[in-house]
Image 1 (spheres, rainbow, N blue to C red):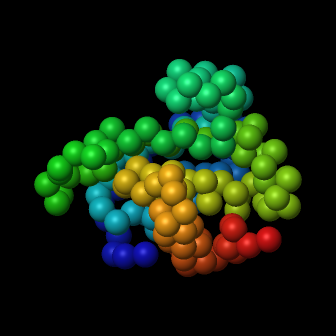
Image 2: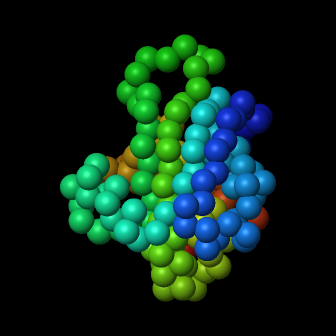
Length: 154
């Protein structure tokens, strides 16, 4: 959306099923498109067991979910040049199932979930209708700029 911000990115594939198709350069492009400030991020692809454990332990929800964002400096007053720090966890099993259900490619759905997670890392949320509409609009604009269709279109 804006000029490139400084990005330190780690991509981890403990669940390696998508490692060849969702490459680090692709992921970096998606992350960079959603950044409004410098960031230090880890994107991690996990299986359903690890996804469920993380969701249960940190959100008290006993199921694997598509994406979890752990924003480490959320709500803190930071200097302008301080990076956003977060881990963004994607559950491969849920990502693949949802992509099939929504008749999207895994790449399209992964791009959306990563953009969504990066926005969460920067303080965006969807707890009420107004926040959800704002976040969805930003996601749609970013994804269009990356060449992907509106993820919320029916």
